[in-house]
Amino acid sequence: MAASLRASASDRTITRMTARLAAVWSRREILGQLVGRDIRVKYSSSVLGYLWSLLEPLMLTAVYYLVFTFLLSRARFGIEDYALFLILGVLPWLWVSSTVGASMRALKNQARLISKVRIPREIFPLGVVGAKTFDFIMSALVIAFVAAIAQAPPNPNLLYVPVAFLLEIMLLTGLAFFLSAVNVLLRDVERLTRIILRVGFYMSAVVFPVSRITQSDRLPEWGKLLYQSNPLIGIFSLYRSAFYPSEFPSTTALTASVVGAVGMLIIGYWTFIKLEPAVLKEL
Amino acid sequence: MSAGQATAATAAVAHAPAVEVDNVGVQFLRNRKRKARIRDTVMRRPKPEQDTFWAVRHVTASIAHGETVGLVGENGSGKSTLLKLISGVLIADEGSVTVNGEMAPLLELGAGFSPDLSGRENIWLAGAIHGLTHEQTAERFDAIVRFAGKGIRNFLDTPVRHYSSGMKVRLGFAITAQLDHPILLIDEVLAVGDRRFKRKCYRKIDRLLEEGRTLIIVSHSERDVTRFCQRSLLMRDGELVMDGPTEEVFAAYYDDSELDDE
Image (cartoon, each protein chain N blue to C red):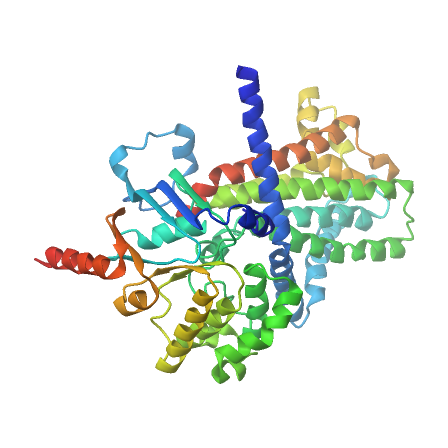
């Protein structure tokens, strides 16, 4: 009796989820319009247009390259073609940080529209993820360019890049759902998130190889395990392994990425649905 | 309910009411100066009961297909909140709202406009927001511009931010008038616009009503409500105090206001 009741309750949750996703799908035209609008504004209204989306990753790469090549002369971590290594970390990282930054305002900035017109609210965080993904794909062309200059050919691990891409999208979608809703209700989320992003940059092996941590003798085992539980480590390592086979992620890091991406998507969407009534009142 | 499902459902429940509001209520927080902090949430401070109030409570009403109903009441009586609950931009804390049929997801004309986009781009965006496909918007584009009038046609490529409030309302109404949704909700819109445009709107609404659409209007204007609605609902302090013929409801509404003045 109790079991069947519980089953019907979870059935209802699944039916509700399915109905919601069907509603989003039936209104995908808006998603296209909103993403298109953001992209048009970004790429056409400024003189540099598309170049802007390349400038930030290139500048960051240049700065770290200079710092780790000239200032910290023992550095570069013994990596060949350090610029290529850097950009393979910097681009996916900028995709994370720009999505996180924009998703916190995904619902807030559309408050007028959301409080007047009935649209599936999922559209707004999804729109942010869509626009930032487009940026990432466009800027990824730089990788081909840098690789060509360094004359570094990719290896068969290139086949894992779509896996890393999908995992990152799932993770970011979950984060966007979570942050867009929570940030409407709590006022210090934005500040806290900015700090976490700062730390996250260094916690995600963007400028140095993961082996620096995992093979360090100054860190205890649990510390290494904790470090690798960051889902971004496995994802970034997968991108890198396409040019640096030795960077291929450990099973621990890969597991953390898959569990983290799927888990964040579920937790994020669940939170979004749970907070929706309160969010609508607050907007 | 998604648009597609709604169409399929309409045939099966044609005799069911278009909108059914069952003992609905929504609660807001009073006296909150600022948003909560993470600390307050984690510590789970109890919320005292007196800090909340019901903007709408114990409202039960049923609106049949093809009916036009006015929502009447003083400022802050909960009529706009009720319309929001019906439209789904607010979710009820108590009771339920059932809508059978597609509803134009619109509350205020021009609300969906993006100020930095031109009038032309906004028509496309509004089309998408209102559930039209790309082709459907393309088909209706000219009719929308024609209805909005010459004042809009000459400024189609100007950002909507530079439009006058009248122009925004014209464009907003022109888009709404091209929607097929059987249920329309309108919140205080007929107040703006010059006489000629108002007449045009009235004629358009008459035509929509002849087509058998269901219309819910929120308005203070007795003229607007009396012209379209045989039936009205009177709200007071978040509760539905009267549901009847429009003239009687307005009589009661005016009595209310006078009592308050004394």
